[in-house]
Image 1 (tube, rainbow, N blue to C red):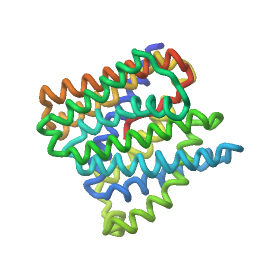
Image 2: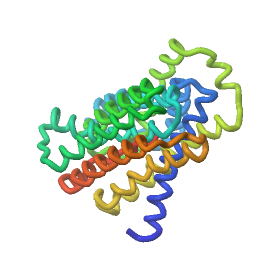
Image 3: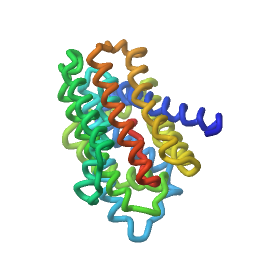
Image 4: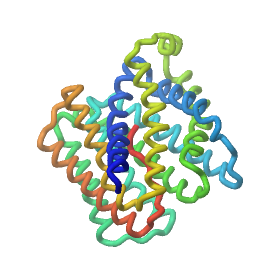
Length: 295
C-alpha cells in the first residue's frame, strides 16, 4: 500500500474506534432506539442520490435492512447503553467474523479446515475469558446484547454476499430508508420523552450523533470501499482489526475504563482468532464482503 492509503486506512479505523465513544456520549441524551432512528433518518437524507432501485435485489436489501439496520444496531446500542464502558463492546462486536463463518457453513455449504476452526475457537474462548473479567462480569447483559448484535450483522453479511451489484453507499442508503420507520415505531412504543430528546440540543450528544452519521457511516465506510477496490482483502484485513484497539484506547483515555490482565488476555485471544479467520477468508475468497464492526 502507498503511504497515503496506509494513512487513510489508519484514519478510517480511528473513526470506527471513536464511533463507540461517540455513540456512548450520544446516549447520554438519546435512548438507543431514538438514537438509531435519528442516525438513519439523517443517513437516508444525505444518501438520497444513491437511492436507486436495484433490479432483482430489493427483497434481499430489505431483509438485510431488518437484520443490520433494525436488529443489529438496536442490540448494539442497547448493549452499549447498559455496558459499563466501550472497551468490552469494541472487543465483543468482533464476534461478527466467527458468526459469519458459522452461518456460511450452515447456509452456504462452505467448508472450513483447521485454521479457521482454530480461529473460531480462539474468538469464542477470548470472549469467555473477557466475560470473567471482574469489571465486565457486572455488565454481562450488555455483552450478551452486543454478541446478539454481532450475530445479526453476520446474518446480514451472508445476505450481502448474495446481493451482488449493490454499491456501498447505495446499500447504506437503502438500509437507512427501510430501517428508520420501524425503529421510530419501536421507539414510540417502548421509549419515552421523545420531544425532550429531540429538542434538548446539547452540543456534545448532537455532535456525537452527527459524527456517527457523517464520519462513521459515510466517510469511513465510503473510504474503506475505495481501498477495497484497489487492494486485496488480505492486505486490508490487519488494518480492520485496529478499530477495536482504538476503541479500547479511547475508552481508557476518555472514560478511565480499567484494563485488567483478564481483559487484555481475553481481548487479545479474541482478536487473534478474528485475524486468523479474516486472513484465511481473504485467501479463499478474495471478494468476500468486508463490513466494519464499528458502531
